[in-house]
Image (cartoon, rainbow, N blue to C red; front, side, top):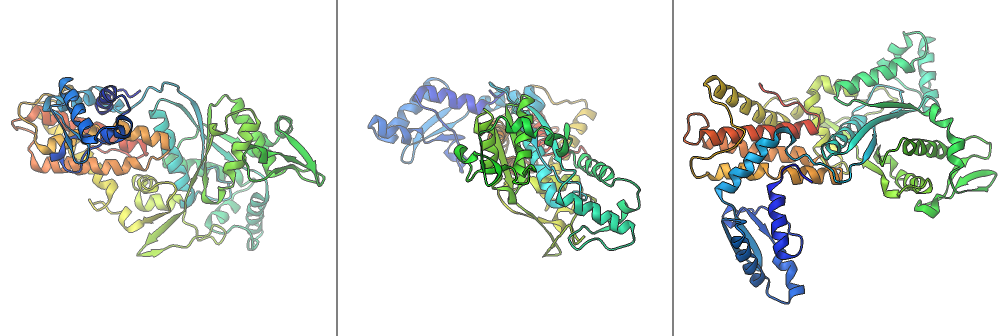
Length: 509
């Protein structure tokens, strides 16, 4: 249930009148009303009546219940609602009362959720491609926490296997004054590690954690694969298995996987899936209700096998989610940069942060749906002007902070409740209605694991605010109290939008 959501309350009241759920939308033309619904079109087949006739009846009921200032049928059977200034003012007061919690939810059935993300082997610094995993996964975790869930972030890394062997061999070769193996790793970071005595993994992990903290991604737990592998026998004992070709297999095909998976190879060594089984078992043993994996585009095959494991271990398959994100391409000077970690010409996250800053990196790596490839324009991202969307939104927040500072210096403070001395102008009404979209939008972002909608919405809020600001004086105006309250409410929403994607909301720029 949302803390404060006047639009949902209005839709619920209309649902009680209509007898079916009502969804409200904002018409493209404000002259067609503040909100509209097509519920009459959906009711027509079951009621055997003309949609427009149903819409007229609903309009009459809405007016009788004082749900709107005006209501009328439109087109083939839409119901348009015109809200009063008083309704919008009261709604704005609710935004102010909720402040930074506006749009937050008290989950009716809160879950304990683990989001496992990044989990890159410590064979080198974090890359830009991996940074998308971090930015997306962390934003999903933030949105889920805002929706009322208990969320933990985990990093799972390997200290053995082929990639790690190549990493060790590369460092040792450089220590001997030789070139790394052809299938090894190259780059200045290998030379830096070679100059330090001892195991290169701890300093590499320390660098990874430092980069993540700089990127505003904090992990609650770090898990070593070798520790998990010690629990493989206990995990296998819980699975449905069979023997074939001297190997032990898990019958995952009976649980939605596209094929069965090897647990123990014919030579007696555990397969990769055995470690997966032990890891999934460990997660559920820690009493998480929901497990979320954030994996790259080359891991589509993991969805079926991991959900099969959940089911085989006695948990609903949909309690384990695998979120697949697509690649990131850096574009600089109009050219796409080709990257390879082993060639040593990879783009590291630290270098990107040095170039465009944390805020721009977080913004651009979240601003598109995770199922879409990102082309990150470095030249645009490092600009500090309104062509850069993150700067544009941050500037709206800073401008509001400046207005509120100026008001405080003259002894005027934005009130916790909105009051209007005059009829609201269109720009004022539009901005209030935009703010009221936030609870539904952030709720949908949590449900769909789609935080990309938040920066896109923040741009629309900034658009509406800048339009309002250019058309209307705030201080020393005939409606100063209301406009200060509107500024403060807008600041709350913009700040929350930025926080949910890990971007700072500056008071000065």
